[in-house]
Amino acid sequence: MANPRETLLAGEDFEGGTFSGLDLSGLELTDKNFRDCRFHQVRLGEAHLGGCTFEDCEFEDCDLTMAKVAGAAFRDVAFRRSKLMGVDWTNVRGMAFTVSFEGCNLSHATFADRKMPKTVFRECRVHEASFAGVDLTKSIFTGTDLRGARFIDTILVEADLSEAVHYDISPQQNRLRKTKFSQDAALALVAQLGVVVPK
Image (cartoon, rainbow, N blue to C red):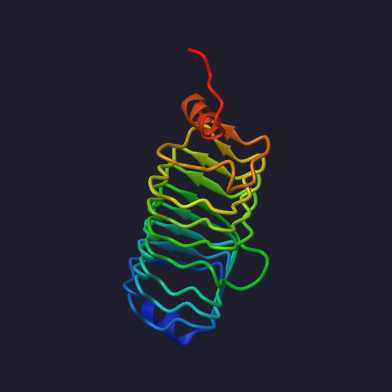
């Protein structure tokens, strides 16, 4: 019976596969195609994923800390309870970058200049991440901690941050329209505009 790790390293095209409990940290996994695949408790820290395509895939309880994803493509990919610290998503391939994050640690990640409308961040830790120049139209940040995250020239039109915490967003440096904030955050934004709200 083929070793799952060797099969993954040697193969190029995978469909409907499940990969569980593998340690692929730091390995070269370039130019592979995954469709409708599930990754469970797979370690991919500092792995090189350039040229890979992930379509309709799920990552659960995985570790992709500092994974190299430049040149990879992610279409309809769900990350759940996974570590994605320090991942630079800036140069992922293709216009269709459609991902969702639930219970993930995305601290120190970089999403600069990506188009990510309708992205869901649910119960995530996103400390010190960069969203500079990112299109987050209609995105949702339910229960997400954005402490130290950078929002500059970010499009937050109709985005929902009403249940997010610890964020600092300048109305002068970002595009806000019908953006949902918590009451306290909304008052802080109004104060930045020099408006005094009577108590």
